[in-house]
Length: 107
Image 1: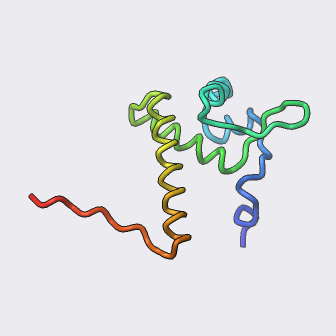
Image 2: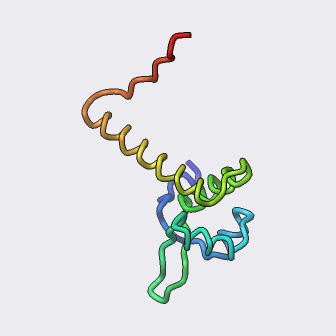
């Protein structure tokens, strides 16, 4: 088992410069994403931003959506809808069911 698989993906360990280097996103853009509510990095007691593996994955998704032509407002909406979908899936599983596949409309 590798070290990467044993880490907590929510553990905030990366400084903004490291997060920027790992994702290819300028730290100033990371600050903008935070201002827009797209990212919520942890903060040290001194106020320094710290990013987790899960934050880095989210930055990757934001970048993917930007490359696909969405603006930040559109990305915000997509991320909210993704979170709502995940919550609904969890609720269905908790009720002992499986989410049904959408039926295709005839014709």
